[in-house]
Length: 158
Image 1 (cartoon, rainbow, N blue to C red):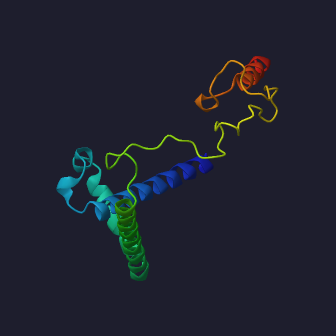
Image 2: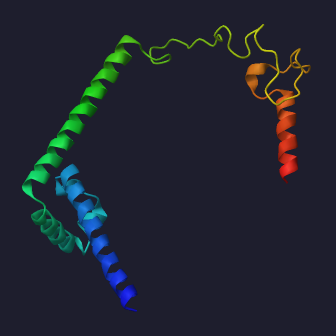
Image 3: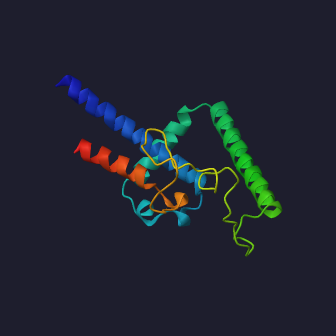
């Protein structure tokens, strides 16, 4: 009974610390209380959570908070630099469709499905080396031999 009781109390303390930590994060991310979600603004336990967050904040040394703020600011700068680099790349090399141009659907030489390069045979398959006898295009999905292999595998596992 003592073990369960202490486990219950310890669980409550950990849960309270997690809720207070989430509150501190929310205060950092959304400092204006008007922008908080309505359920948070109306929460009956909000005063308790605020007091708990203040207590936790008072236990943390100032140098740890300064290091944390510096790390967060560095992360924000890195995100901003990454977004600026992404914007620059998109200006220099726009993605197809973003400027009204249509993407090319021509396969690369040597790619599967390119005439003269696709034998129709796959590893572990009894596919016809001459290609697909039913005329199914190689780029539209599974070849008939692959589909038959998959169906046999599915049937054998049932």
